[in-house]
Image (tube, rainbow, N blue to C red; front, side, top):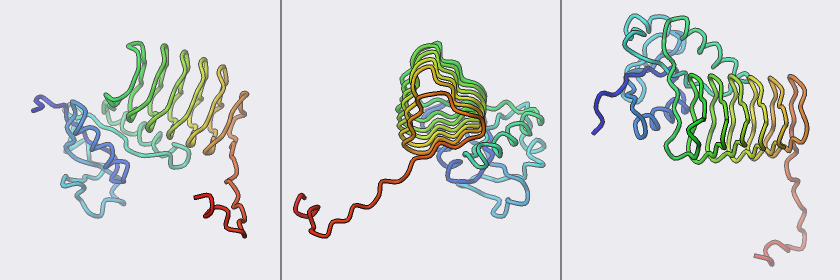
Length: 225
C-alpha cells in the first residue's frame, strides 16, 4: 500500500485526463485529488468520482503550497492550448509534475522538464534531453544526443536517429522516421508515416498520402486468403 503520496490536481476532464489519472494511480507516487477546468467548461462539477473546480478559483481550494498540478491537454492547436495553461498554472505558483512510466528503457542521464508525460515502451538512448510540456505516447525510439524542445507531442512507433533536434510546438504522427542529425523545425506537423531525411522548415506540414484502394474484380484477395 502506497503511503505519503504527493497530492496533484489535474487540469482537464477529457479522455487524456482519464489516461493520466490511470497511470498516476497505477505507477507513481502521486495521488489525484481533484480536477480543474475553466468555469465555462465546468458543467458536471465531478469527474471520475472527484470534484472539478473552476480554474479561476483552484488556488483558493487547492493552494500551490500544498498541491502540485498536471496539465492534461493534448495537441490541440498544435500544443498551443496546453502551453497557455502551463503558463497560467505557473503564474498561479503551481509545481507542474512530470511522469515517466516505469516500463520504459532509459539511462540515468535522461533529462526531463516540467509537465512531461511519457507512456510505456519507449527507448531513450544516452544523453537525451526533453524540455517542458512534452507528451510522448507508447513505443518510440529516441536516438542518442537528441533534444526535444518545449510543447511537443509525439505519438507512437516513431524512429528517431541520433543527434536529432525536435523544435518547440511540433506534432509527430504515427510511424514517422527521422534521420540522424536532423532538425525538425518549430511548429511542424509530421503526418503519420512521414520519412524525414533532411532539416525541415518552420511552420510547415509534412504529410503522406493514404494507401489507395486496389480494385480486385477477380476476387484475388479472397483466393489468396
